[in-house]
Structure formats: C-alpha cells, structure tokens
Length: 82
Length: 82
Image (tube, rainbow over all chains, first blue to last red; front, side):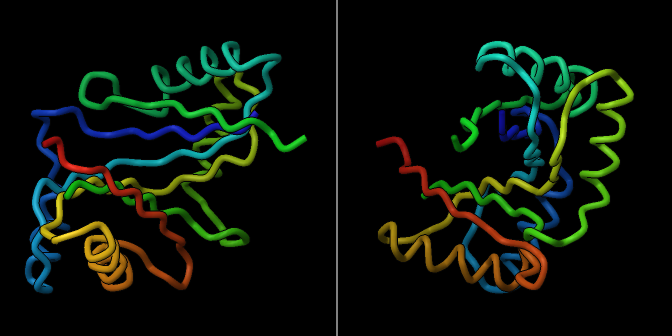
C-alpha cells in the first residue's frame, strides 16, 4: 500500500530553513510570508488493510520519520493500482 | 493566499536520503519499499486570484524551491480563511 507522509515543524517551533528560504525569496522579489519547510516521505508498506497500514506508518513516524517533540506528521494513504 | 508545495526527486533520479531511511526502517523491522524523500514548503503569497498565485509559486519553484533538472513539484492552493 502506497502512502505519503508529510512531516512539518510544529507551530511555535523555530524553522531556520524556512526563514532562510523566505529571505531568499524576498530578495528575488517575491511577496511571501509564513514560509515553513518540512519533509515529504513517499513509501510503500506491506499491510492487509488501510487501518493496519496507517498504524504501521504511525509507528515509523514515532520511531524514525519524525521527531514528535518538534514535528507533526500527516499520513495520506494511496490505494495501490489494481 | 496559502499554498503547499511538494518537491520530490524525479523518477529515475537517485535518492540517497530515501535509501538511507528505507534501510533504517528495515533494520527497525518494518516492511517497506520505494521510499523517496522530498520537501514540503508551506507559504503565504500575495496574489489577487488563484491563477496568479499559482503562476507566482511556479516561478518560485523554478528559481529557488526546486531544482527542475532533478526534482518535480506539485502546488496545492489553500484558500485563506475568510
């Protein structure tokens, strides 16, 4: 089962990468604000159904993909093409 | 106008970060494959309508947010709460 995980810095947590990108965008002449940078992880997991897949991916996030102290994650399941 | 940009390595392009994460996940006992890692950029852009915002963000992607040679990007516009 394919899934996409979005990992973002939590609200209130400093995001130096986002600040740097925002400063560069402004220097290029763009009008932007509230720039925040996170990661997107696409993966394929072996699971019997959607809820098992989601539970498995949640464990991956807690253990490796995200730092739950400072990052939030969002899991989107994409059904495999049949 | 708020937007979310997903930047991913193009198909066929090597993704060492994804390979490393996949190896670590496997070592932790997870059954995963096809792991690919990209970036998610959340930002707020000043534009009069959705198509202007999209065009502006496309320019940002071409100039700074993505490397069009090796990365593809996907723009999702989120209407501002009114």
